[in-house]
Image 1 (cartoon, rainbow, N blue to C red):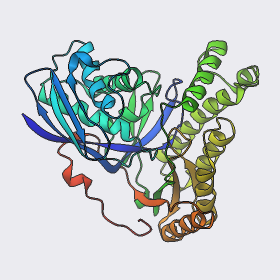
Image 2 (tube, rainbow, N blue to C red; image 1 turned 180 degrees about the vertical axis):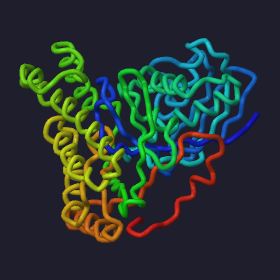
Image 3 (tube, helix red, strand yellow; image 1 turned 30 degrees about the vertical axis):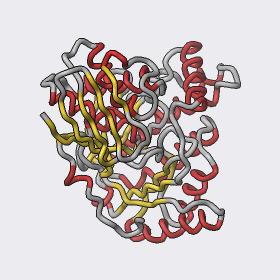
Length: 371
């Protein structure tokens, strides 16, 4: 049995770095997708290759475990390992990655790869698992095999998102619901600005931030239930990290309320506040992200912020349609003046989640302000 499956990356409107703290997140799936061609095998061998990443994996299912295999193949092999560990009847596959969400851009290419592999394996081996269970396998792959201590927002968004909506994810209990999000209908666009600064979620910086949040939780309990008065009593070195979590969860609630009332244009200042918190309290921004955000605002964006784990990657800017060209040109000019590589600026719109055969969704039409 052979087929092609795809899964999207995601942009998180609001709710950054709270998915590992029982928080609320509001991502949407982007048009860019990771596409895999997969063949079911009758033995337990895995042969994994990619048109985008160096290296490949050719080994047995029994060789997979924490830390093995290294590199991109761990995201795929880890999914099979997690399903096998959970008692599901999976065996070997041949898998080739033929298209990819831009790597290292903060748009969750890793989760897209995991989720594309997960739905392929689920169908090829006739597991019939709900997507929430597939998401758990993807999270285990990333946490335990790859060793990246991330939360579950990216996988849930890639597997459960629907076109024309954002998805509200409650990471405390796994509940999700679709929230109307159609910027074009409001005369707006979401610009995604890839700074071309690359990062890795498995690095020490991300882990340090999560460790500080976990220490805060150990001292005052769930940050989902905490207020700023409780946060004020924390040790000074971890207090700002906890403050970001508490205030960011509140910002998600504010944005959801506005979207459900059809007041999309009013979320801009909340995006700005989120970036300030990520930059100042969590300290996960960088000069390139700050430049992209500030330039977009000055050029006419209603609000802008970094997205993803931080230390590089992408920012988003909520922009009136008649300012898309101006914002894109201004950001590129600012990067040029600073001697930085030209960023990629593209329009993004809420798209479908993971499914079989994503070729028709992979074609990306050129739009004004995009390059």
